[in-house]
Image 1 (cartoon, rainbow, N blue to C red):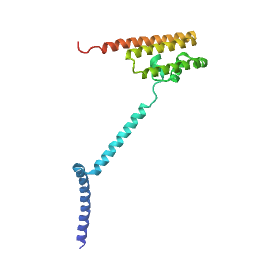
Image 2: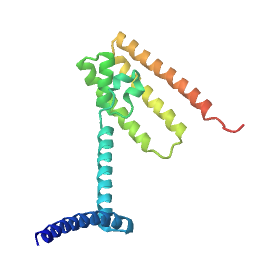
Image 3: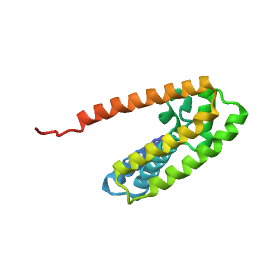
Image 4: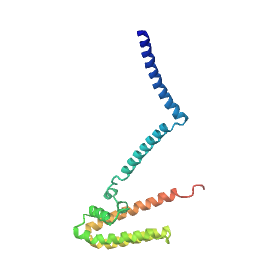
Length: 183
């Protein structure tokens, strides 16, 4: 009789192992045949990974951009920034005094408003907008110029000249690459 009990225990243990392996096989089989729970877990896991990836991209895209002064020219250093950032950039490049800053800030604010209105104006062609942008920038330079000391004027003129040379080179390069593809 003791022998029967031993066999019974072995059979019970083996039955448990078999049931466990059958459950594993059963869940795999459920996945293959369309079981909802494993697919739901997989979808949730995938969505969680996607959310983490999107969060990482969002954090990376909101990282601080290079400082405006690092660009080394008037246009790129000021592009997309408001009057405060442009004033800070000019102050850094030209070593403006507080009095000069207070005189230049309203000029930059006015320019910013004019440029914003020009961007919104859909009645002008691209070339007309470009010409008007240049006119506004030139007017701003003309207003800022008398506020500056001689050395600051020379530095600003040098920055402007470098900017114009880069723009001319870019236009030539872009003109060559945007020409007809098929002769």
